[in-house]
Length: 208
Image 1 (cartoon, helix red, strand yellow):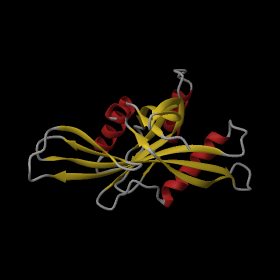
Image 2 (cartoon, helix red, strand yellow):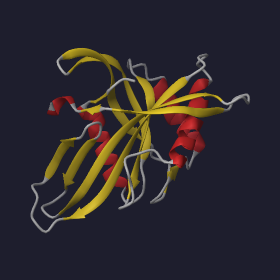
Image 3 (tube, helix red, strand yellow):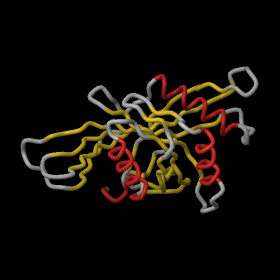
């Protein structure tokens, strides 16, 4: 599965959406395309995230988020899919909040993705479809030692770490993970199930 390159605009959308909604979860669409980038000094096919569009009409709670207005959700999806700017809806993103949140897919997350796979499979004849889900684990921080205001990032083996200091003593720590989820028909007409998940390495090109 492709590595994921997160462009500045998409990274900004992910971070600000998660911070704004805290301590409730946020979610939205990921928009981008395939491309070629140097990975370890060699050209390689990658998926490039160009934008992260947060959904504004969702029902948000500290431990879950759902479509509060199904018609509004469909309008947002339709607007993105028909904007004709050369990019496609690649998947979605959501946040996990609190000390027990992790940048990984829960069983509830996979059930949600299975619904999305069912939606996108309507126009795709393939036996398998895939969806990219980016998960942001977010924790509020109060620091005893002053921090410089701003955003700093850390690179892990696959994930990205981020600290957002809103002022000298308050901010957020965030870990971002990306997962390709493959789906296939489960034997019933119109029903799909998750067949496999693969964690993808995340890259921030302006930091490398």
